[in-house]
Amino acid sequence: MNHFPRRHALAALAGAALALSLTTPAFAQKKLTLGFAQVGAESEWRTANTASIKDAAAKAGINLKFSDAQQKQENQIKAIRSYIAQKVDVIAFAPVVTTGWDTVLKEAKAAKIPVVLTDRSIETSDPSLYVTMIGSDFTEEGRKAARWMLDNVKGDVVHIVELQGTVGSAPAIERKKGFEEVIAGKGSYKIIRSQTGDFTRAKGKEVMEAFLKAEGKKINVLYAHNDDMAIGAIQAIEEAGMKPGKDVIVISVDAVKGAFEAMMAGKMNVSVECNPLLGPQLMDIVKDVVAGKPLPKRINTKEGIFTADIAAKEFPNRKY
Ligand code: AHR
Image (cartoon, rainbow, N blue to C red):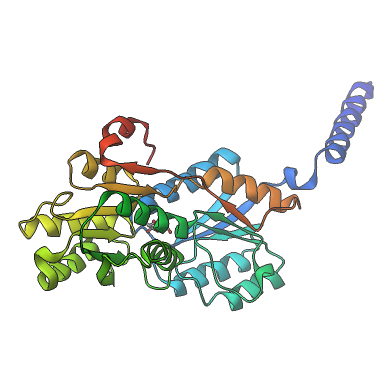
């Protein structure tokens, strides 16, 4: 029996395998694993953000390990530790709050697992603990909200109530800061109440009820750090017999579909955009990090502002 053809075939196969291993970079041969620790499911924004990450990972061929921290920092820390133990290639997370990350991030660094921050930033004395941060400029979002108010709401005295996001979170701190920065020195604009509604509809409604009980018709403007809290508050305003969007001007952040519906119904006046569709960019970053490509320390997303008068025209274009 002649074994030549079989030997030839085996040699050709071995040659092809060698050629592939020489021409294909090592990182491209193995399916990458990304461990992602999400904040929770507190808002329409977050739901869209999670969907974007899951969808983009599947499209990019990245194996995604996903956990939902239910808005608790300790759950995120646990998830990060479990990703370290599982030796994932990259860890990404949207930090619930800004502080308290150094210990766990040092553990990731010791395990040589790069960390990417998405959506929210952290405070750390050692910026080498993460590679890059991708997300919105929350301070600018706060400034945009205040500038719109100065241009559109006039009066001898304008009484504002503020629904803050989660205490200690980057969007709550920075949206407050940006807003206050713009109204500073404008004597007629006064924040008369400010409290957290934890970025949820239920809490937004509950806190707005308390604001209305205390201040009643004195309230001219509601500034909510996200649309879900604004939507909850709109319900409270209606139940108090007032007209949201008219008696109380409603200014919010995110520009999710729910906000467009409220604007089209005349119950919300403006929503500053915060883009949750970070998935595709995150997957590119994951590949770049593993490939050792240099990345900027901060990557900002581009965003606009949407007012009630253009809501109906824009609504069909909205993706979240
Ligand atoms: O960090 C982004 C913020 O978190 C969104 O504006 C808010 O809706 C979410 O819960």
